[in-house]
Amino acid sequence: MSSSSLLRTTGLVTRSRLLGPRRGLASSTSTLSRDDLPLSGIRVLEMGQLIAGPFAGQLLGQFGAEVIKVEPPNVGDPLRVWRELDVDGTSPWFRSIARNKKSVAIDLRKPEGRELVKRLAIKSDVLIENFKPGTLEKWALGPSNLHPYNPSLIFTRVSGYGQTGPWAPRPGYASVCEAESGFRYINGFPDPATGGLAGPPVRPNISLGDSVAGLHAAFGTVLALLARGKGGRKKGVTVDVSILESMLNLMEGIVPEYDRKGKIRGPSGSSVTGIVPTNAYPCLPDPDSPSVPSYIVIGANGDTIYNRLMNAIDRADLTGPAYQQNHHRVQKQDEIEKAIEGWTSKHTASEVEERMREAGVPVGRVVSVKEIVESEQVEARGAIKDVWVPGNGNGVAEGANAEKEGWKLKMTGTFPVLEGCDMEPKWAGPELGYHTDEVMRSDLGLEVDEIEKLRKDGIIG
Image 1: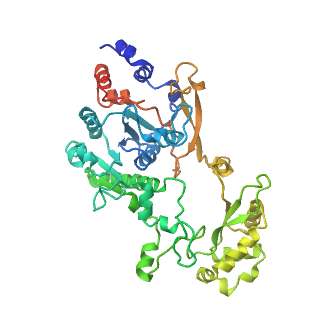
Image 2: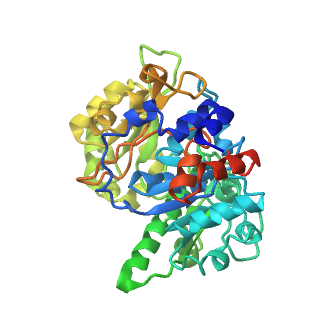
Image 3: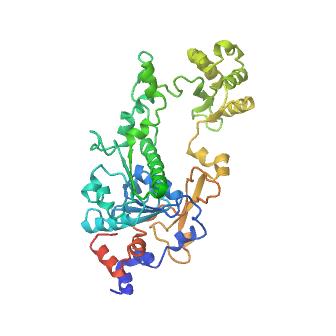
């Protein structure tokens, strides 16, 4: 079939793919140079969905890797429709986590789809997945299947409990793994009688376990890439990331303290066990929002900082040899905390901030996302970026007015900041299958009629 016939039969979205990137998308990326980024030249095939695997892919993509995200046709990554939806029906969260990625829609349930993914993996440096262990092997896409064709391919595998062990077959949800890592037990308010939880644990209102696992996955991938490049070594390895173990990695001294002292650390409210004083303290409501509770965090656990704090709140009586070091203050925690709270509760957060800063005491308000977006420090550092999303409400931006048929989306920037590297987001998470034709042509060498047949048969979208 000719190109003109294909354009007539596949409609506007495919037409724009075949003719090149949409003008709205291209305008936000054409001036950026990515050659100076540390992962430039690395190709990542992302087969995960939702959070853990895609967050790892996001981090690698932000530092220069080419990330090809494989999604099921018609449906895509479920995160596309999680939580709040934008005017085009896509989650802004997805637009952020899928930034800089190429979306390729392939049906992995069909042998032809798995064959396409196999061909892409053979030409990639890294394959990221967060399926239940054994899924890739069932599809004949595991290390033993692909390493004969691409021995240097790195498999980054994220799961609840790892690829081995008696719990490996279990479905691994971050919330469950947070509980089983001990993390949830230490988050909440203590029962005065037992020191254990007084009621249900308090969870952060984010998918913490997934994001922490994603960080470990990205870090492990970079380590594997470094190892592969050492001494001419060309063999790829498996990076086995467990959400349970990733959370366990955050648990500081809890395990060795239990081993040597028999201590079982419990919840501590908004303070930290064994470090005094560091806590959230109530303040008078802000005059502009008299009905909204106001809290401020003061961290004064350094010995000299503690003395400055006590002098600033006119409680020099709580200084001296009996309060001089942290282990002294731990014994007098209730007394110290009541003194600080008694003072902050008589002042607004602004007044507390001013006094603490004059005294050189670390202090910060407990703020919402509104204050974060408006923060002068965040703005000065460029920690939040405005990224263009092309479209007019249906995900399509065409013609001379393409720039007007879209919107800017705020999302977090790229961290850590590397000197000399331009890490501006190239584009927001694309429409489902936006890059399918481009990848099929450029990376797999398929002709237009072959692509049309694959789409007609439901193999690609």
